[in-house]
Image 1 (cartoon, rainbow, N blue to C red):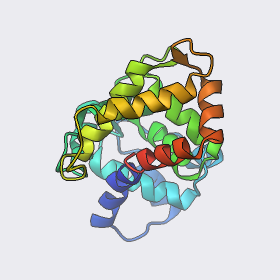
Image 2: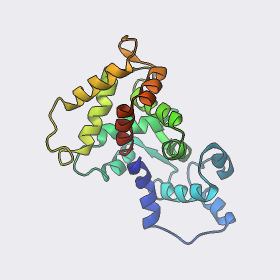
Image 3: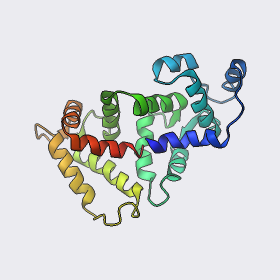
Amino acid sequence: MGAVMGTFSSLQTKQRRPSKDKIEDELEMTMVCHRPEGLEQLEAQTNFTKRELQVLYRGFKNECPSGMVNEETFKQIYAQFFPHGDASTYAHYLFHAFDTTQTGSVKFEDFVTALSILLRGTVHEKLRWTFNLYDINKDGYINKEEMMDIVKAIYDMMGKYTYPVLKEDTPRQHVDVFFQKMDKNKDGIVTLDEFLESCQEDDNIMRSLQLFQNVM
């Protein structure tokens, strides 16, 4: 979560400009290839104020003048926050979680909607979003290999300096414990209901997910 927020909030800090009046704000939003939905509509759909949306949009536009970001650009931005590890695989999964329409690009609306959930959503909303991230093939279930792919990508991204004594089988052990707790009927897959129930009744799982969410 911190990395995603930092990706664009740091950009608007570096290139902060004097505040403009409403007419100029609306005018600048027409000067891109993709114009986002009206701020009033986004304000109604998210947990951000109009002023917060304007600040987020400026940061987004500074890095993505076209109003959209593709996967390669997203990976390049994300890699800056994890110089000691390989963030490319996790950034790939995260990008596709943001790209809800599977168009190959993330628009400002996609970005701010996800950010609203991750920063200010309810526990239930955050868990549903996390489930979608882990459900790589979008079939409505999480299998053990999908969970393994995400967890390993997180370990790879954090790098050897963060985990100096990390053993090669640590991600697998982590996943084995999680999956055993979540797959309540032992059918080899975790449904959304199983995921929600397991996370909310097991403090260890919830704490681990909160740690993982810090790299979003």
